[in-house]
Structures are given as structure tokens and as C-alpha cells.
Length: 217
Length: 217
DNA sequence: ACATATTTTTAGCTTTGCCTAAAATTTTAA
DNA sequence: TTAAAATTTTAGGCAAAGCTAAAAATATGT
Ligand SMILES: [Mn+2]
Ligand SMILES: [Mn+2]
Ligand SMILES: [Mn+2]
Ligand SMILES: [Mn+2]
Image (cartoon, rainbow over all chains, first blue to last red; front, side, top):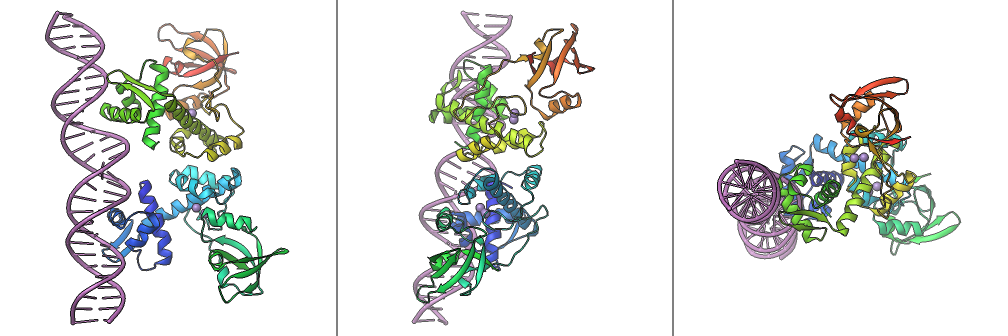
């Protein structure tokens, strides 16, 4: 698999969670920051290689081989993200870009030794699960903050948006993985939320609330 | 710099040690495992980018910018080789191939944090010096085994050939960096050498002797 | 139902980095 | 000094991965 092919497979894999009956050309092009015609070209190539099935005008669906390849790339990406944070003093908003490159280095020994060196981590710095050598994820139930209950207490376990902008916003509000959050009030007007973090209170907008994952405690 | 450009710059840098007055197209093509016409194409492109000067039919010479770029790639390569050996249980004959990929990930933070994480190593697993952040090498005098004196004692400090085949040969004869070697006899017929390693004696051919670097002790 | 809008594909071009074959230049050696 | 040999460059192509513009197919709204 070339670098471009791996990136497309990963994108299709992620989009399949959202578009269950085939990933559309436009959605794929947008995810890849390319044009629809480029997405069509690549989808055809990946179909030729039996990494996915493509019904023209209908969308693409990963084959088992395609899924395996995508999961391998995701495993590498997330392991490197852990490495960068745990060993090289990167913050969670700095790792993604570098991991986008590291994820394409395809050496089983490298990845498996890295996994062992890191102590077989199961989650990356953004709370995303890391598939094991066999491609198995440890799935955990997560609730999005926007759908939380007023009065309940939660632990922050993940983010949806992993952009540097959003992560820095969270940093500046002292929200990170493991942070305990109590929902104080939900404002019906704009769906903003008042949260208690330890002894301080903050207000977050709906767009923040839609990107933060929690576990009830 | 693209991946291909970086690899050419590195190759030219290495060849310049040997061909002081300009690297020839043929030598470059051979080093890069491409054809002379491809080397010409790339040399022209790198000349356009002011990474080197090229006199047609005469050869290529790195500019200061080209040298800096090449040294950066070499720094990354050698730091990753140290990482693989020290942290991920790679042996010295396994690291080169993976490092060929890792060396192209261009992030100052990544490289400098890796350097710090490894404790600012000055030599890679093959005894080659690692340039620092400013591109400075710590140069050490080395003697090739083929030119050693009979009766003298040396420490092994490097290898010229870093192929897996040669390194595995050294492993199987218990020769590694730091090994103490006494030269017992030089056979005039084929220039083979009898060496004392601790309490055992071995005979090595001239081609081995030309690829092992020593320091007199 | 049908015209319009949207999505997807096709056609044709570009750039990068490689190739082969032919032409140009330099080197070597008679 | 020249002819042959070796080296280097040029010319012309190819495949990957992108693009724009046009054509084809599908979806939508009245
Ligand atoms: Mn990431
Ligand atoms: Mn992540
Ligand atoms: Mn190496
Ligand atoms: Mn090395």
C-alpha cells in the first residue's frame, strides 16, 4: 500500500462509522482535502486491489482486507501519539501532525516493539482506543457532554475534534482526560452548559459540548 | 525537500567524502540504485533549488544549504538507529532499513526531543558520529583493520559496510563496537589477518579487514 | 412528471521521479 | 592525433496522484 492509499483507507474506515451504507465520493474527497474526481480515481484503484467494493454512484465499502489495513494504520498512528506524549514531552495538541507521518512506517517489529516499550497502551492521548496486534479494539461506552444529565458527575475520557485549536481551548480551561466534571446547568436558549471542575465553575458552548466524551461516575 | 531529494542529497554528501572534486552522475546513480539519466534529472532539479552546483559533464558539489540538509537527514537517521537499538531491542543489523524511512520525518521538536530522550548520543550503533542540533560532528580518528600493525591492540569503533550480511558475520564472530582486538599475524599471500579476541583466535579475510574501523589502545 | 440541482464519473492535463534509447561530450589509448 | 570507449545529457515515455471542466447519473421540488 502506498502512503496515499493508506490515507484513503483510513479515511474510508472513519467515514464508515457515520455512513453505514457506503462512503460517498464527496464525503471522502472532503475528508481527504482533495476533489471528488481524485477520490473517484483512488476508489477505483482500491477496488481493483480488492481493498473495497465500489458501486458507481453509490459509494465505497471496505473489504476485510481494506479494514485490516486501515486498522493497522490507526494502530500505528495512536501508538506513536502515545510515544510522543509519554516519552518526548509532546502535548496532546502537537502529536497528530507528526503521527500522520509516522503511521506510514510499516514494520511489524517496529510497531510491536513500540507497543511493548509503551506498556501495551489501550488508549491514545485523545482517549481513542488503540487496536492490538490482532486488530481488536477495547470498546468503551462514552457519552457526549451535549447529552449529559444536569446534576450528574462524569469523567472526561475523550474528544471528538482533535484539532490543536480545540485541545488548546480545553487546556486553557483545565480540561483533560481524567478530569472530573459535574454538570450544573443547561441553558435552553443556546444549549450552553455550566460545569463544575473541582472548585471552579466554567461555561462551555454547545459546540464544545458536542466534542467532549464522558463516562458517568 | 521531498523524500527523493533528501535521499539524493544524502547520497551526494556521502560520495563527496570519496570524490572530492564533484560527484559524478554514474557514481550517484549507482549509490541511488537508479539510472544515470535519473541522476542527471535530479541533479538539475537540486541545482535549480540551489542545493548544489552542477557543471555539466563535470559533476555535482553540494552548496552550504545542501550540506545542511544532508546533515540533518543523517542526524535523524542515526538518532533513530540509536532509538531502535537502545529502546526497541533491534540489533545493529536490523536498524538501517527502518531508519531509512524514519529519517524523512522532518519535525525539529521530534528530533530534538528524541535526541534528549536518548541522552544526546554522539555515535550510532555502527560507530558513525551523530551531528548535533547545529550540524557539528565529533570527529574521531579511526584506523581501518587492513592497515593495522601486527602485535598492536585495538578497540573496534566502527564499520564501513553496514549491510545485514556483514554485521551478522561480525556477530557470529563476537565482534562488536568496543571489542578489543589484538593483531597476531598478517598473511602476505591473501592479506588475511589472525586476530586475538579475548582468549580465542580468529582469522578474517582482507574484505572483512577493509570494513572494520579501530582505535589504537 | 419533469425540470433543476446535486453528485459522481470521465476526459484530458500537470508534476514528480523513474525508465530506455539516442545524441553529445569527454576520456583513453592506439 | 584520432578513433574507440566510456560517461553524461537529452528526448520521449510511463505511472502515481493530483487538478479543472464537461458529461452522465441521481436526487429533489413543484
Ligand atoms: Mn491523531
Ligand atoms: Mn489520537
Ligand atoms: Mn543506517
Ligand atoms: Mn548507522
